[in-house]
Amino acid sequence: MDSGYVLLIIGMGLVTFLPRAIPLTVLQGIKFPPFLQEVLKNVPYAILGALIFPGIFFIDGENVLLGIIGAFGAFALAFSGANVIVVVIGSIILLSAVSALI
Image 1 (cartoon, rainbow, N blue to C red):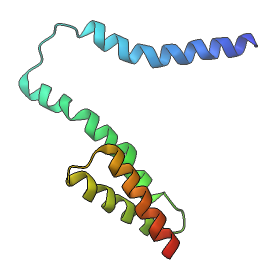
Image 2: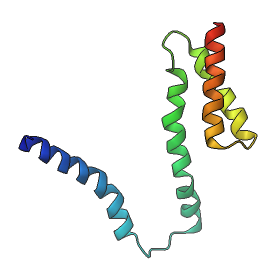
Image 3: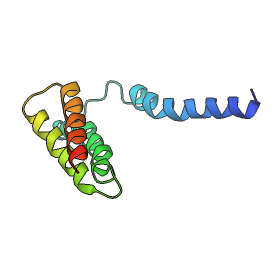
């Protein structure tokens, strides 16, 4: 393996590790105000929404309706209390059925 690849892998490892390790070590033992704690609790959900939401509109370049139908199906299953695996498989089945009809 070329030494450039080894340096690239080490660099990618550091770039992945440092943003996780620094807050864990530097902020350990610091007590945040309750308002900031509530805001930080919602960050993972906001990031997850930001990652998933664009995919709804770009699932099929020609037919945006498929993404919207799949999203509504997934939301309905999720709000009914279904397991994550059931939500994913259910939305895949729904999109397969709808795309077969279109």
